[in-house]
Length: 409
Image (cartoon, rainbow, N blue to C red; front, side, top):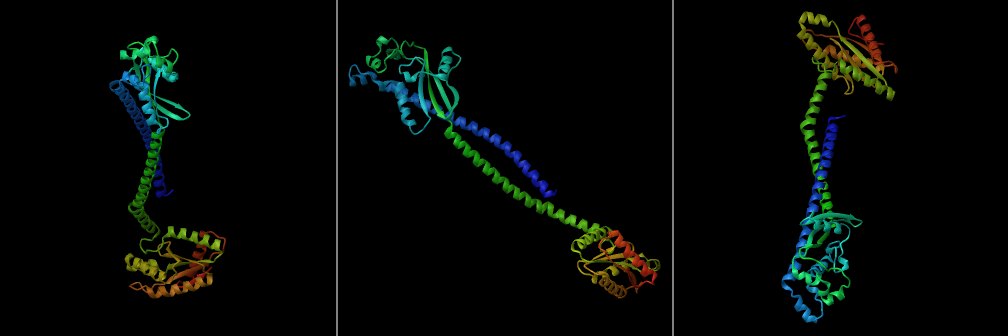
């Protein structure tokens, strides 16, 4: 697995972990913010309802309204609960799911009778286990709804004119709301709860849209970061590292003295050349060469001169080779040339040219310098070591034959 791939896998894994953590946190925070927004809106609606009630109590004279309509008329518009409910109903026509309600255990209007959780909450208000504003959430097929409720307690004796003794209640009210509901209330008694209900739907849509935008922004930021880090990785790490590795590979595959391929590189390149020849059914030849009397050169002129001879010999040979040929130093003064796509006859002619070139190219105290050459062609089956052994046998034959000559096997 490459460094870049490992780096990117780590980067993507880190992003996914960060995304999951961020998404979980952001989703929780958005849910909390949505609930706070819904609750704040419900409390505002409650304040609005209470403001309408207080206005009716402070500014509207029910007796004046009754007199204007007739002595026996019931001024329903002067009833605070009615005014608050109707005012908010006008507002809520454009807000589906919003509702203001005054639920009572013993209401005048049967439509205001408390049901289910409303009744349970009012009972808690009555026994003192619940006080002040109460927030709850219900869920049905239409979705979740938040409710803000506050106890409805008889705090004004004037209320008992309509809700005390049935015999003292206005006849018009009794006619409008027949039955025995809404009477026998007592001063200080908690008779119900005022409830504002606000659905989560609007805030949920907003929260989901915000969450989607957050994910898109986060993904976009990661994409930019991913590209930027990969560019930096290439320029600051992988580029220099590849150059350094290539330099190390060259050093590992290069003979330090002559600059040609070393034995390690030769073994690999010969195996690759055999594989390519086998696949393409192409010829392949080797030339093994050895500097004649090289030990005498070292003994007579010194190792520095011997080293110079090797350098000049390699340069001379390399000049006559093709770009895809390989020259390698496999021993002290022994070299091998790999000749892809070359028959034995052509390889012999190349060896003869190299022999002549070498005799003229090496100059200095040790000149003239000669070399012996052994040529062989791959038989299409043998392994690399067997092929090299046959080239060495041809080289030894050239040595035995008097040196400064080419032998083929």
